[in-house]
Image (tube, rainbow, N blue to C red; front, side, top):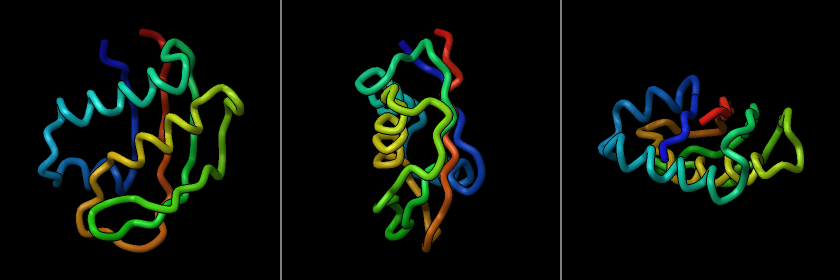
Length: 101
């Protein structure tokens, strides 16, 4: 089952430029959500991460509207698979799980 996910800003642009297939990435994202949180619930998470070498590392949750429901872990899992292209430095990564499904 596919779960919708919205990632805004620089991450979305990097995803378009990435060589990672959209279906493969969607599968990884769906797996993160199913493993850590209830995909029928909604949540907005803001991460602060270091972008380097095409990947995100050292991520930390800086905002969450659904604390202690697993969405923070799901967002961190998502960040671990997101391609970042040539972007470097500290980036804020908004992740929205719209729920439903």
